[in-house]
Image (tube, helix red, strand yellow):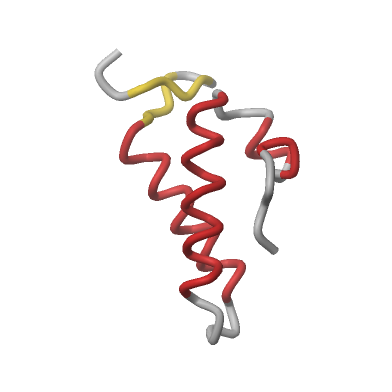
Length: 70
């Protein structure tokens, strides 16, 4: 199911990612969800793609996600 707002994201995403990273996750998830409409594992694929999108701009340091290069 696509997410309209960051507040709709799973708790595991909201609790760990900063707001901008949540935006990236939500937008990537929604796009991937639509792109994989015929896939039996549509939601699973969308979550994997969304995390990959976040990891292109953010990295985990300790228990925090920070922009790459900061």
